[in-house]
Length: 465
Image (cartoon, rainbow, N blue to C red; front, side, top):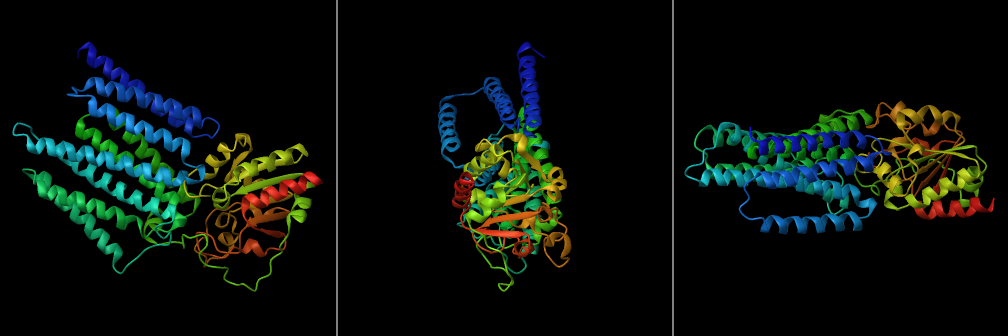
């Protein structure tokens, strides 16, 4: 091995180490930004070394693509609102899968069009896997993006014999893929496999309801990593294999964590067509149940004279962009010597870590954020729980109602506090499409309205106390 190859290998080793270290730091909100920078540095090293390693005929188009991509990335980072982060993560997963699929397609075209090139068995297999996983990730992520954005219904979209059709499509893709790689590559069959992968991606995601979007996003993130790993084998690039494997494994672990947080299997998430998906869809199952409604003055009196407050954020906070007002409220309460903590459920919001990202963007101190397992023992000793736009993750039916679709799902024990104030626009059901028993609890006070407006009113009233 010459000195040049040794230097390239060492550079890839440094980049891989930075990826792993970055993932380690990303495991905590307090160190996530540092982890992101470290992983970005590793990716920069990997890209530069790869470009210097390969015999590039012309850097012109590569430079153009880098400039265009950098501009789009910078504008996205600056202009996309934090509330739209799930959609952006979803679409980025799709772009990652699509890029890997394109690499596999380009390598297939190069090897089959050259009279001297030989397509070995390992390259053939990883090429098929690259277009299959990458194609599914591409179109599946676009559907997830549409569901999150609202121009595709968040409700499960189903049709008769849907799952058998999906199984047949996937089986056909695998059989045709085997035919492509079994002998002399058949070009038209390869493009049929690509088309099936793209169609399957759509059919794979449309029957999944909005309640399960956090799981879908993390799963598609894993798929994008696996597609990149396959592309790395196709072009024989070690760092792409390592990076793809890391993303694939991390996404799969996160998917498992999200499923555990909902007490459901991955198969149930993918095939049960669970939940309504639309926040405004449906109404409470029993409109005759009585609720206690309060105004800003009453809510401020309860909170302003409490000794301890736990704030439970949900998607309603994100939709109303109320995170900055919530941070201001927490600071105001702390100035009155009130202990304030934030209870963050693993599946609150529309992507993994959605609430953590929003609260971090509003500069809420990391030491105030508590995971479900850490905060649940605190609820029985808490004076007031303020729920802002959360629903299913605080529904006591998950513990008691064996007929409920959320039965067995671990929830935040908000109902065990002395008082509960819930800011919500109406009594409409949440993503799971089930009524929330906590709304009708004697200790619960419903504070109806937009989260940001209601929190701002609370701030104004508490200042008068």
